[in-house]
Length: 198
Image 1: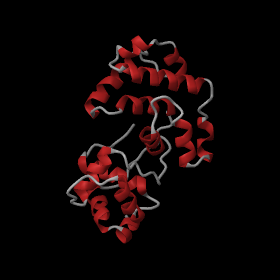
Image 2: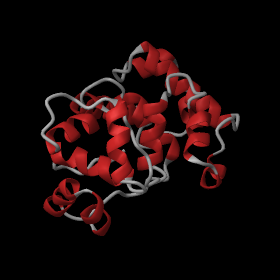
Image 3: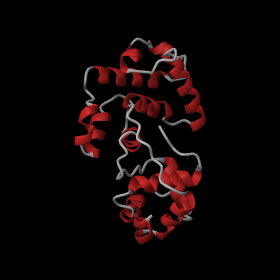
Image 4: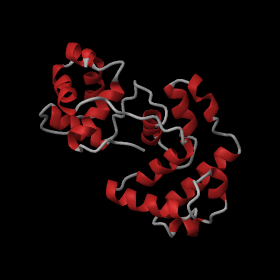
């Protein structure tokens, strides 16, 4: 609140209206990444339905890379996942199993280094990696310029005629640094009062 009050009164008003920042860390890294893949390019409601069906495939147990490895692509598709997303989740599980993804070292890596490691996974792009940085690692300086909800929130908050593009958001973000994640979280909340989580 103190930071935004000094640097961006418009965002400060949103913070004041919305209430405390409540981003919770989720250390279930594999599950967060699965959820991010499930959520790609579909509505929140559709993602929630498919996520429930995906979890049901494990008979009440927690999805793990080893358990995912026992499933076929067809079995994953039965939960409502597309052929592509099924292959992405299988690839993700394999990379956890073969230690291509070293989550224990993430605390020592920069945002860009983590994004680089995660985007080696089939189907994991920059957006998915950024959601991981925000919701799993709670990095405070993530600016998800390609996130449609973030852009729509900014359009509403700042009364813009059109969705801001990445270049404009980066200019705006100079006022938020080093709390870009907080600005994104409040922009999401301005459109949806439910707390965003993965």
